[in-house]
Amino acid sequence: MDFVQNLPFFGIVAALFFGVLCSVVHRRAAEILTYLLLGFEVVASILVLLFVIRTGTSFTYMMGHFPAPWGNEIRAGIFECFTAFFFSATMLLALVGGRKHIYHEVESTKVNLYYTMACLLLSSILALIYTNDLFTAYVFVEINTLSAAGLIMTKRSGKAIAAATKYMVMSLLGSALFLMGICTTYDITGHLLMSNIKEAMAALHASGQYAVPISVIIGLMSIGLAIKSALYPFHTWLPDAHGSASVSTSAILSALVSEVYMFLLIKIFYRVIGWDVVQDNKIMNVLYLFGIIAMLMGSIHALRESDIKQMIAYSSIAQFGYIFMGIGLGTAFGMQAAAFHLFAHASGKALVFIAQAGLADANGGDRRIVALKGTAHKNPIAGITFTVGAFSMVGIPFFAGFISKYNFATAALYSPNKIVITLVTLAISTVLNAIYFLRVVLRIYSPIEDKKPVIRSGFAFGLAVTVMAIGNIALGVFGSNVMEYIISGLKMFG
Image (cartoon, rainbow, N blue to C red; front, side, top):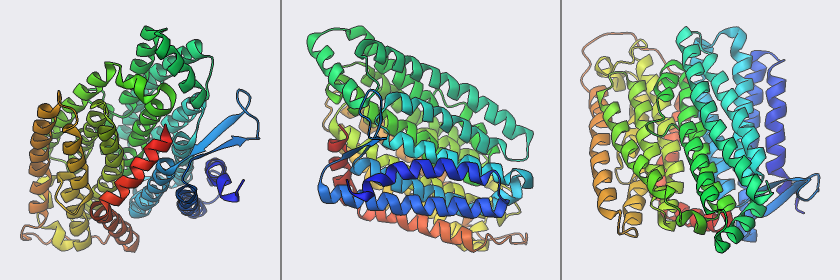
């Protein structure tokens, strides 16, 4: 075994260890440790990704070198490694970009807790990406839930505590449904290791046995993870959580927490149930329907918002709808489009969340869209990078969002029964995206009429949003190359 094959396991354990360490050191030391951890995860993910590309196959890592059913496994392929790299880099940039707001909005005695929760959240994200064991996935789903709620609650406001409580209630409901699906899966297959479950599921499907329980399993897991992903109409926790959390937390919640559950759903469809079994199940039509509704309703709610942060939060609900719509198409092309959108949305949404904080700072902290007039002149870097993120969300060429919408439109052509609804909904959603994002862009570049003092966002903010913007444009320019790796990764995934 090459040493690089140990890095996914080391990354998960290191994140857990650093989470404990951050709770007992000075808050500045906790911040530095978190940055070092994330930097390590980015480098480690790149090294493992290069190894997998070079070998042309995925690999499994048996913890303690004990085989199933006693041991636990990690599995790494192109899709997993690229996702781990992208999510780790996004989380690092989100924390760096919102650093000033963390120290301003989080009580000084809770800064250690904030970075502790960030490390634990990272460990859960990496574990959900790499694990090959279904029950281990559930354990880290719960760690993810608790650490995300902890990040929300660290902000100094009663509203944040109320939002975190609401998030916990909704998220635990999703976890319960997901656990019921796991229990039923174990009952009919006798396995928890994903590859073993898939073999058992294929045999049961071929024989026609347990057809109803298999449908129930797919339904329970899909609905449970849809609730945790804030798919409409299970979205009610998300606007409050985003609105009351610190800016870094909002970026992480939207770009990483919700998306890792969608990643897990894709993994379950490919590696646990089996894509052939899933395609024959009518649950795909249900996911498609809810995705279509989310694309429209999320945008309609965003259009009605007067607070820029709330507007971006509702935009996330619409973007999650794109992913579920792509999955619901029930084709390989739809799944590939959905997988790419995980990265396009993460890069664009984290960017606009951080950039809007710079615009609000330039206006004395006022987040009302009507009050942001001319703020791009006061904070040019925030204005430019917000515009990049907005253009990506709308789907303008040369930005990541354009590649996503092009992929979804192409995927629709391979689903004759859904082509008209998909293309029409894509068009309507794109128009709505343009209305509420471009109105903000026009507003922030309007002539300045007031003399409010400028609050400098600082070097860390400028560096973070610049790197995010470059990354988004790179996804848009080299989208076809990224898609090739995603296609290869999905083939390994199964």
